[in-house]
Image (cartoon, rainbow, N blue to C red; front, side, top):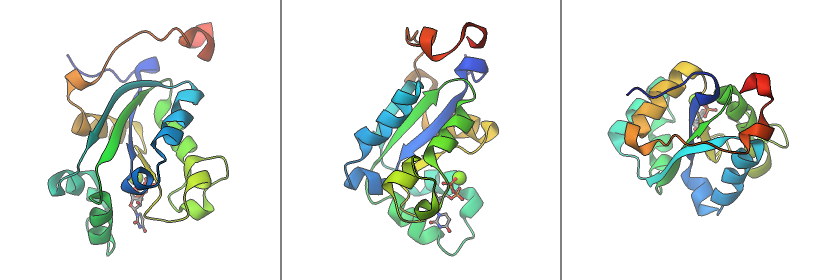
Length: 161
Ligand code: UDP
Ligand code: MG
């Protein structure tokens, strides 16, 4: 069965990066998504190998900072999470804030927890097409879970469910 991405089942990939792991920010970061009303449908700790990183950051492969970015992302395992919800890709990007963390909006995750361009604590898929590719790249189908969340009766209005 293919992974569902429509409506309430839209999914996005979030990585808690090595800087956040070292700084003890896992719980705080997970809390932002949970409190927002998103549903966690997949989570695991994993080390990123060269091949996965090359695929994941293919759009940056020819940048001068790619080697240091790859080294940073391999400094420790990351936490990979798949979050689900209505228009979740956009919602999660807004929660994360812009790449250059010291200029990210206060109240966003990067705005509140980071100062660097590289060490910006989280990755989030930047559009629905990439979210589909990234979720499939990091999670096997049987690592994603489909379950009812009673909170949805209050997180979404009837016409949104
Ligand atoms: N990055 C970097 N230097 C740069 C631009 C990006 O080290 O000048 C890193 C940074 O960790 C960023 C990641 O590469 O989060 C991916 O870059 P992208 O432009 O996709 O930013 P994002 O989507 O993460 O905001
Ligand atoms: Mg990106």
